[in-house]
Image (spheres, one colour):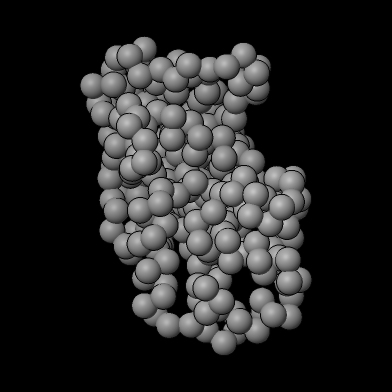
Length: 251
């Protein structure tokens, strides 16, 4: 797996190998309510043994349940069938089946298992391929511990976490490819005016709280609108929704 991603707006501790093998130095302080939450069961997929072992130690220090470990995409597919993890933390560049192809197959054989990519690659093609294959998030290996935990928890409930930089690169590439009449027609025929408003804000990088504030509705209502948008457009997550919106030309 390569490095992960960090929020450029925050000065946060990074997941470097030194942190992985001294995990207590990089712990995130949990509030009492957080500590009581059931953590998702996670499958780690990375062909670098030292990084994977260190990552496991670090996540277990935070109370994350590690369902298993795999070194390649083929073993990951088998483990997903046998272990039914909530989240797979997936590298991209591995021997045999790539992380992207494994993600695509997981989305078909186990749609309730979410994939969070954790890699060193910030190449446009890798990002696009992973997102379109169904990944719920895309982090670089220099991501903060806080951000990795947030990505895992977001993926577990079907939400997506992509760094602002990565998301901007994805949408920039989609814009460069031009708009599609088909996506525009689907949006106009399937979505309500309010849902189109929400979709535009998603494509502009707004999170649920920001959307709720801008539209003067509750966060729960925002979640309901997003669920409806994903169902009507037959897509997996909000980054795919953003791609759909940009392709349609509505933003």
